[in-house]
Image (cartoon, rainbow, N blue to C red; front, side, top):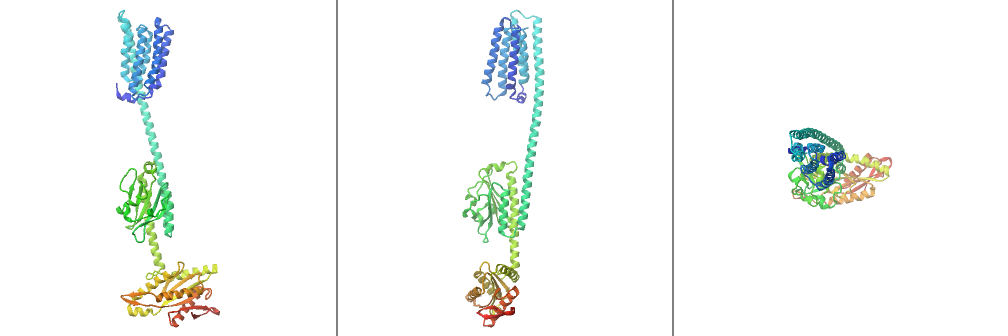
Amino acid sequence: MSSKTNTDIPSDLLPTLGPYVTGSTTALMALGIIGGWAGESWRSVLGIILLQFFGGVFLGILTRGWKNVAALRYTNGFFHLITTTAIVMITGGYPSPFWLVFLVGVVVPGILMDRTGVYLVLPFAAVALAVPQLSIGIDIQIAMGISMQLFILFFTGLIIQRTAAWLFKEQEKHQQAEESLRQSNDQLTLSIAQLEQHTREVRLLTEMGGMLHTSTTNEELYGIISYYMQELFPSKIGALFIYSPSRNDLESAATWGNFPAENHVRIFSPDECWALRQGQIYQQDASRSGLHCPHVKRLKSNNYLCVPLIARGEALGILHVQFSMDESTAVLTTPTRTIEAVLSLAASVAEYVALALANQALRETLRNQAIRDPLTGLFNRRYAEETLDREIQRATRKQTPLSVISLDIDHFKLFNDTYGHDAGDVVLQNVGMLLKTLCRGEDVACRYGGEEFLLIMSDISLEIAQQRAETLREGMKSLSIVYKGQPLGITSSFGVAAFPKTATNKEKLLHVADAALYQAKTSGRDCVVTAAQIEGGESQATKA
């Protein structure tokens, strides 16, 4: 028997054909009994029919759990042939019309058992037809009749077998074509889903890049990153860690999902992340085991990505994306998003974020250079005058006072002439630090030019500004400045003016403050002078 043919035969064919085979045999035998084919042996034939029916049912129940399809069909085939042979022999063998039941028998093996099954029917039919004739002798006519019936069985069985084999082969081709079409359809569906996913990710990346490019502050930058991370990595949690100014540790600047709020997981040192050590993406997931980043151990996660943020050859931080425990294997098998796709997306996001952080730092540097004095770190003259315009408009709108203090270091040229310009720079730097220390956060302190400084103070009256100037004057005198081992003591003169009490616009306000400063200089220096408004918009200065 060909094993390949057996393998190609559908395993559910026997249960499907079973009722038809049993019904056909039973009907044929019943017609034979009614038609008198069985003669006096009809009772025995009827008994065998009943045995065949109930035995077939019992055999079906007994073999229903069998996994071997070939053994199952041959067991049922043998039972059918034995009972059929017994009926033909009881009814006298050749030329009993009951031999027709072998036609049913040969059809079944032809369909289910290939040629071996057909060959198996012939000895049973020969025994059934010839054995009852042995007692009376077999002449040439009987032998020819038996041979003819066996030839009919053989020829019919071969035709049925070849036809069944061809049908099964065509059915297999059809099933293979259907399976190939289904796989192609599944692949097309997957490709479309992946393309849609990729298109969405590209769109979000483009949107994020545009938003990052137009952000003006770090707070805006971090807010944009947090929002788009939730869109690009839904159902995941993570954080953006940025180097602190000292570069001794990294702090979480933006988080998304349910990232823990505890400080011990939001701050860690650079050597606690393998991605920063290696300068490349570090991955930990269900399909890849390895050393955990020490900072991730505290997060109690086994599935995460750490992507270094590198721009212009400098490491700025890391992008940390963490998968939940339920996603540890699901993320790897999601049809539209493999782990390779997640890695690629994370790398692209890291490039966008790193470039945005670098550009923001550059913009901040350029902005500081544009509005700050590089020596003292205070605002420059242009920024002070622009700010004063804005603060006067605000004071006018809110009907609140605004004061300015103009101060100048006494005998500053003497420092440069005696100790050199480096010493003068040291003095200016110390004055700048003092002003930063004693001014409020909303005050604007600037280096107005040379050794002259200007303070703009909103919501401060002339009287309070005078008190603040006195505090600054005392602070200047108490400064301990040492240059090359030589102590340098300084004093300063102050002129104070207020809007709208002593002036009604920017030009007049600066003019009366400068006039008050000049009066302080001519009055012996190291003092505070306030300006008082007089008729006609002129000003006079009085020593405080």
